[in-house]
Amino acid sequence: MSKIYRAELVGVFGCPIDENPTGVVMEAAFAKLGLNYRYITMLVEKNTLGDAIAGLKAMNFRGINLTIPHKVEVIKYLDELSHAAEIIGAVNTVVNKNGKLFGENTDGKGFITSLRKVDVDVAGKKIAVLGAGGAARAISVECALAGAKQITIANTTKEKGEEVVNLINQRTQAEAVFVFWDKPFIVPDDTDIFINATSVGLYPNVDESPNVEYNSVKSNMVVADVIFNDPNTIFLQEAANRGAKTVNGLGMLSSQAAMNFVLWTGKDAPIDLMEQVLKEEFGLT
Ligand code: NDP
Image 1 (tube, protein in one colour):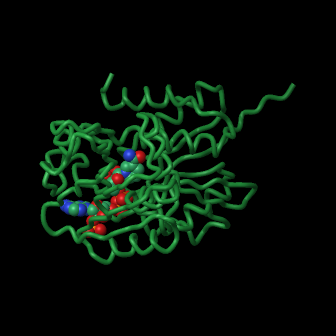
Image 2 (cartoon, rainbow, N blue to C red):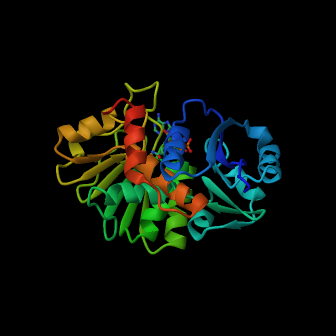
């Protein structure tokens, strides 16, 4: 009888990366299903991504996650992109299909799943998004593809905000509007879902919050933050104080990790366990 000792390898390339908790979540999920997979958290600097991708192919990795600063740069090394990843112009997950590298973006899909978990559907909704970086782009495009009616993008760098707005107007059915964010953002009255997709409030700057006129947040709005470290952001606290329903960034993180698990293993992800492990990592249980 022969026994298989070789593990299937996946992981993440990023810089900085030391505080990324995804490995703990994925390893717990692999153990739960008895899969001999290893998720390795790797420091890959900006100018060595090409070497890292060559190494990934040489060592027969099943796939890889990409985080800052590699999500856009990685595209030139890939053989195929999903429809959404192609529109977004960024990839956070690569699947190695017999030597051919397929790029997907599960950031926005994970965000939409985290809203669905609290019975919020983006279809037909008016959405306001703070930010126009990688996370904002993925969320806005996926919301548009999922049937959002209107998306307002507020950003402090005009060109980046306008680029996302043009992308949505040209490539999806949703209507997008740009707001130059140079003073406290006033949330339009008819907004259904208000999202912070900037990095403001991310650890260690947990005392910071986006420049918003918080009295314009209404109790009938759903307010979501992409920040997961620490998940109880001032942005969400301000919204909760005005009676809004709030959704933190942990749901997005665990939902996209679950999607990546399915892409790599072909098996259903133990999502409840993954959420639980993530909460434990942040001392929320
Ligand atoms: P990027 O660097 O691509 O974009 C950052 C965005 O934040 C830009 O729009 C930038 O504006 C804006 N911004 C930064 N500082 C300020 C400020 N002081 N005031 C106003 N706007 C500001 O980062 P990402 O989009 O990749 O990541 C954003 C956040 O999302 C990170 O905190 C990351 O951890 C989180 N994230 C969470 C995930 C999850 O699963 N929960 C998944 C992916 C990311 P400008 O364009 O003007 O520079």
